[in-house]
Image (cartoon, rainbow, N blue to C red; front, side):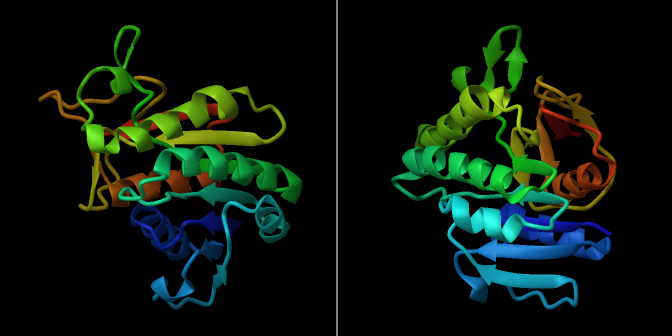
Amino acid sequence: MKKVLLIGASGFVGAAILNEALSRGHQVVAAVRNPDKITVKHPNLEVVKADASSADAIAKLGQGTDAIISAYNPGWSNPNIYQETLTVYPAILKGAKASGTKRLLCVGGAGTLFCAPNLRVVDAGVIPEEIMPAVRSLGEFYLNTLANEKDIDWVFFSPAGHLAPGERTGVFRLGKDDLIVDANGESHISVEDYALAMIDELETEAHHYERFTIGY
């Protein structure tokens, strides 16, 4: 069993990670803006109200954990998502380092994956304009800040191009920097399988100071 601090545990991805972690016997401190959104009851779960933009709060909550998993998202409809992502994620990183935890596992985005030689998804003209601020900001955090981080063992786990509710199959492929596509050229993964792979990473510690990705 490992003890983890899960930031954003009430969100779409965070909730799936929470369920997967608890089902596999891990102890979870779920840090959320609104604790009422966590309806799960479990002896290994502690729910706390926390401000992810406070490095001090993250540092305190992260003490004594084996890892911090960040599924932070300001909200896709948030008009300030670009700036908030670039403000809050560095604060999470700072807090994680100050906490003394061993690892920081970040729910990443697919935008910075390569879909062709020297062409990232974000520059391929396939992402709807309305979500571009979110895609660009998380990508900039990864490329400009996290990729240069040497003081904490981190991973940035990019989902496939399409991440949606589905089945927990346990059958998928992992890669590094290239978008994974199926025989029809589609890039997709269920949030349940994404969460499964994230907790696999928590347990096996297979990746270090790098990004990896998943797809069918």
